[in-house]
Image (cartoon, rainbow, N blue to C red; front, side):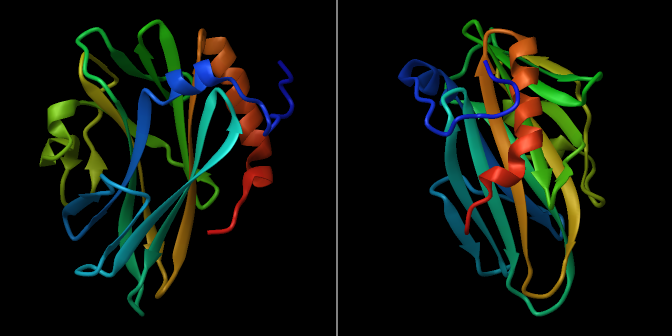
Length: 210
């Protein structure tokens, strides 16, 4: 495998099917309330003046690459927590999800496949991450400090779990912030790290219009 570039034309239906067993859901937290984009690719939350738009870009059969746009429609500045959630499409007690303390990356193990997930916002890594039991996701139990939006840190969960990245960002009035997220699938941690390094070097090449 070429570890310096990814060919956009790479196509392997088997790996694409495997990679779709893990999905990404963006969310936002404002004024102590968390909202998730659970259906479709775009949602406008008129009651809080924010919208989320997701675009998936096909770049490689082992990678699901997303562009995430969050827009503040109000004319004044405000602070918002942007979240990225990763969950399995099917439930199993045998799944293992963990944060690697060495590289601060999240891995999911399922059905003899390893997944690496990563997230950036405004070209900076979303360094705050955690693993949470699935049933915590729609409660305040994911937060260590609900008022400040600091995640409760759990390094590993076996069974039905989700992984989360978050970063607080201050929006200007009528500003759109851009993020990137990817899910890489493979057979080993080394393979995933190689692909992750390629993506870090080539992110600008995958820029796309909203």
